[in-house]
Each structure stands twice: as C-alpha cells, then as structure tokens.
Image 1 (cartoon, rainbow, N blue to C red):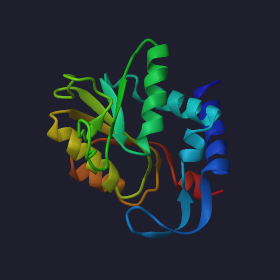
Image 2 (image 1 turned 180 degrees about the vertical axis):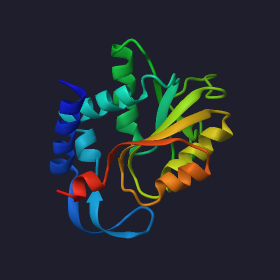
Image 3 (image 1 turned 90 degrees about the vertical axis):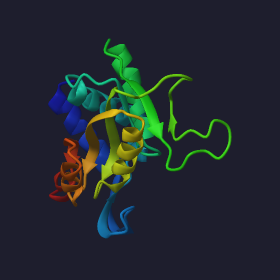
Length: 187
C-alpha cells in the first residue's frame, strides 16, 4: 500500500474507532467538545500495523537509538514500532517512562532497558498517542534528560493543535505529528 493510501486508511480507522464528539475533560484539565482515544486504534491489528508503518517512515532517517514515551499511550506505539524496525532491518529499541516509579522491585522510572543498559548519550524520540498542550510528553522528556538521553524530537499520532508546538519549541525540541485534529474536525 502506498504511503498516501496507508495514511487515508488509518485516518478512516481513527475516525471510526478513536474519534468522538461530546464534552470531555482532557488530561490538561481543559474542556473540549471532541476527543481522541487512540487505544482502540493502537490495539486493532490493522490500526497498530498502519501506525507503526507511518511512524517508522516518518522517523527512519532520524538515526534514532530508542523510541518510547510516557505510559500508557506510548507503550503500544513503541512496541509496534520496535518490532517493525527490526523487520525492516533498522532496529530502534523501545522503552517507556512510568508516571511514577514502582514502589517495589527495582523501582524503575524507565522500563525496557536491561541491567546495565543506559540511555545516556543515545538519540531518543518521545512518542505520544494524542498531544494537547505537550505536558505529558514533557514529563517523559524531563525523565529522559535526567538519564543523559539526547531527546531528538517528539512525535505524536494526533496533535490537537492546542499549544503543544509552543511547549516543545520553548524546550528546544522539534515536534511532528502524523495527523492534526483539524483533519478530523473539518469532515
């Protein structure tokens, strides 16, 4: 399938499985009359494959070592992209950042690394399912920067276009999206 056909098909899946109208309170605390819940798309076989494909294509030239982000939205994305990157012969390892470290076991804030493995000096992309103000992704960025990771960019599947680009620009981070909310609102 061509990139444009994949993008159009994924748009249809997101519209059907993950987009809705009606008043909701967002993670940022803002009220909205529309929402995206990408979990049904990320966990759908075709949706997961298309998200991984389009994300891998968007990132393949960025020379990345790792892909991940804040739990829960980044977990299915990072796993699917890591698998596809291996199949494409350009492996990008996955991780995720806990919202708060576990209170038992190794008490890790960042999961997916083996003992002795470090993100220090590694090129990392933070991925997110839906981005509003960028606050959630910035929590992941801050945790990663504390480890010495080089956060190369933030990539979201859907940018709600409500301030995230300004948040990331202020933090000196490139920001990209696969879709913009306006692509779904104009229909």
